[in-house]
Length: 204
Ligand code: SAM
Image 1 (tube, helix red, strand yellow):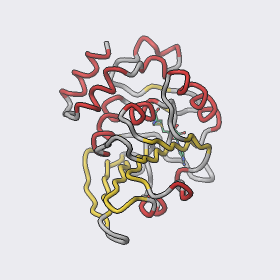
Image 2 (tube, protein in one colour):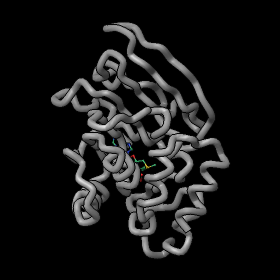
Image 3 (cartoon, rainbow, N blue to C red):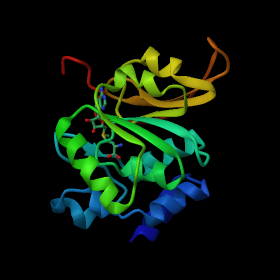
Image 4 (tube, helix red, strand yellow):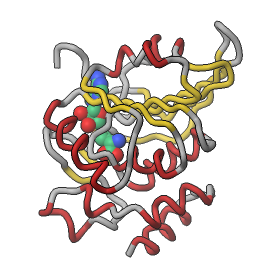
């Protein structure tokens, strides 16, 4: 079933071999609530705890491909959720820091990932809008919830040459890539449209 899912995301345009390999080996069904387990290898998002979702595999692959992950990259993920995207990054050999704002998900995923053998460097319960200054700079940052605007701390926590992949927008988001070219210079590229759950602010 995982191989079929690989074929589906390939047909939708994913070409990065390491990303496709990650989809073919990570047991997505274990990241999902048991009521959805039969659907785990469909290319769809599904509900997880705390009114959140495990992202569609194509979306995970799309964002990961844009990150151009190299072994040993130091990566910050905003929105740990089920931990599936975190597992993909770990499998690609990245040193992963991941922030989750929902305590229930933070606790659950912190226990679950090591059981499966995925060991992010640090999972943090906190607010992704402020990033993780204490560990900056990062080779790349990935935001896995829809951001109404681009949080400035995330741009400033990138290395020169670093990449920020972030879906930007309210109801519909445009996948946006920022590459840091200098202390204050960023190249911006826009890609396809997606629908994410919102990146929650302080008051939500
Ligand atoms: N990467 C996740 C996965 O593979 O399951 C995607 C989960 S979901 C699409 C987005 C996640 O972002 C949710 O778990 C949500 O709680 C989290 N989130 C929302 N606002 C946040 C914030 N301000 N800081 C950190 N995480 C946040």
